[in-house]
Figure 1 (tube, rainbow, N blue to C red):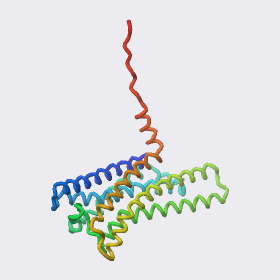
Figure 2 (figure 1 turned 135 degrees about the horizontal axis):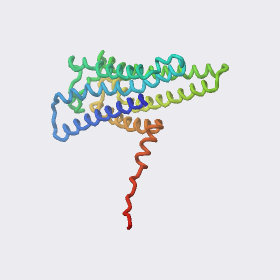
Figure 3 (figure 1 turned 90 degrees about the vertical axis):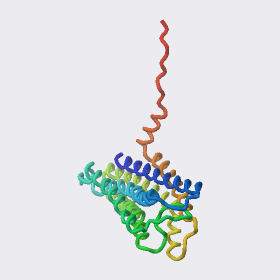
Length: 254
């Protein structure tokens, strides 16, 4: 539940960032404002932070389940202290890795898209951002998933206690759900990825950021629905709140 809470918090922050970007763009479009302010630069930095924060929030439970299955006797790695330390490290990483963009002038105001982002082109900042926010956490999740698949297949061939094998399959199922979440983000983030690759060889379309963020906003909604569907304790808690009714107070007849 600690990792679930971390993922939900990351989604809330991600949602607030996308809403802020959308409102900023809408306001500038309606008022025909063609200049940026400090809030625009902060939103650009904030967008890179929450993207890494979201993807790393899925990486942590995958790492945890890997150690639970492969190294069940190493209780230290399963302790609350270690889990909290890893969560804190991911938050520090998410806020630190893009901070240089604010001082190097890489985050600029794009007039056509009414947004502050790094210009899409073949450059070190773009590759560095893509690696930290997308490639590293996603590739590690995929690697953990395939290692767990191999491990479960291997122990299935040997004489293994039934409870150990069932536990391994259960944890593998949970990691598979994380892979589904990542797949949603990758599929709906494909336009953004395509525009990045296009910028390496040619210029991206004029309204590339507007198009990309439509898909990103849709992915946010689907991820929230998927988290609710896959997380039974969260679903049960929400359903109890909706199904609960205040007790009716009937007048006493004397």
